[in-house]
Image (cartoon, rainbow, N blue to C red; front, side, top):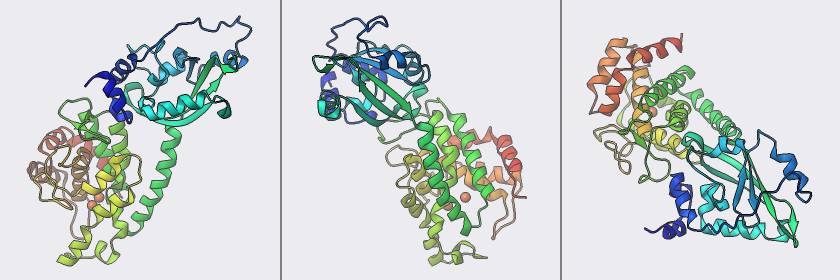
Length: 381
Ligand SMILES: [Fe+2]
Ligand SMILES: [Fe+2]
């Protein structure tokens, strides 16, 4: 595929997961006619530029009238850039890969050239920055000096709202989680422990080529990274959120469930996926939907099998399956006494390749002490 075709086909960030690839593509379009940067001594440069330029904490980018990147500050480099990438002299759409979408880009250019819009533009974008971590940012492009009634320069002011966004989403979904715990027999510490075990396993997989996941596109897998580790440490807790839709007579039944009751119980992964459908991190829904799938395809609700990115069990759910079962075995349940650490580990290990991903069980074997430490430090007593 030629670079041009690639550019024209670009629809979203995921088409350009690799920044180097993105920059190579947009280089095709560079028409850099370099003019000197505005000097501080230049009396016609806007006071806004002079005032903003030396602010260290806000990522800033200066664009010329042709929307070519001419300067960016250290805060932008720290926020966005990967070592080895050069932005100066490239078109503005190198800034964020969502700008690579031709329709989006044309709209942006038209707005910036339109006096009725005040030659300004703002939007929220999602992308990946330092160490490939996902970010959410507000971009505000302001016109600077005018020449012949059109802006001579533009200043892009970038506000990183990633943490703010995360805290709002976390608060919303935690309320649902708390509501679900009101009726389940699971304790608050069970879900904290499942988060911690899952994060421990994920940390062990970081950067190793045999462990991959994807965000939106199963053909676009990536290695376990800090986003994955952080997300699973928060989202494993949601595995049983679908039990909010399961009758208490079934959830709290003292004794074996009959076939009909089991059928109702087995609806909770699908219910969880429904509840988490609007969660911005797809991992949330995948954990809820697939934590009862089994490696050999005998689990529920969809009898998924193995680790194929398209048809298999998502990595996050395979991890949470081990974490959840480990904790259930070690704790008292209405139908069983707690098992010892040794017996619990033996069950997990003997179920490698049937219930659990055998590769993950190998990883678990090296983490038994850490699992025990988590279990004891977040005990229910
Ligand atoms: Fe469950
Ligand atoms: Fe659980």
